[in-house]
Amino acid sequence: MSPTPFFLRAIVATAARPTAVRSSFSPILSTACRTFTTFPALAGSSKIPDSNTPKRVQDHDDAAAGNVEDDVFQTPYTNLPPLPRDPNEPLETIRARLTYQARKRGILETDLILSTFARENLKSMTIEDCRRFDKFMDEPDWDIYYWVTGKKDVPERWREDPVFLKIVRHAKNEGRVVRQMPPL
Image (cartoon, rainbow, N blue to C red; front, top):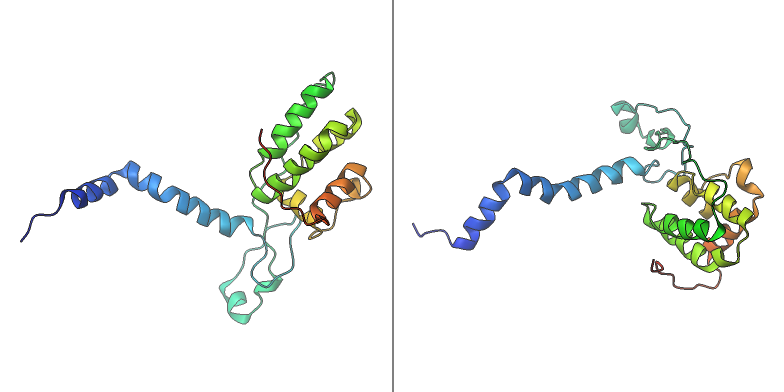
């Protein structure tokens, strides 16, 4: 029997360490969990639940009977209260904070829409518009994405808001501009 080459022994030894296994598989596992928990609608279903929709447990018989599209799943986030804001915050500080918050949200689609909107519009926005944009960004990311793209009904509080309407117009990208994340 021939001796095992050094590089194979090193790979096996590294993979056998608990930290190596955890670090190697955690991105895969977290991606898999995120994939299955953040997409509320199943394949073929056009229903997207509201964030306040109660969770319904799916029976195995429902899936076998083809009733999967009728199932409604709870979205994986909770509506957290917004962070308190300083009422005397200067406009330039608000703009700098909004630029950062629009870019660093956590969902790529929402990041791209809001950060490019902020890059193009924040400099010309009044303090009232900035505060409305700030309040809008307190909403959950998936709700923002679905409202802006027209996949979910927009709540009454945002339907006629001028900043929201600008974001919707921006998201439609009627000029077919290729957009990238702006630098910070």
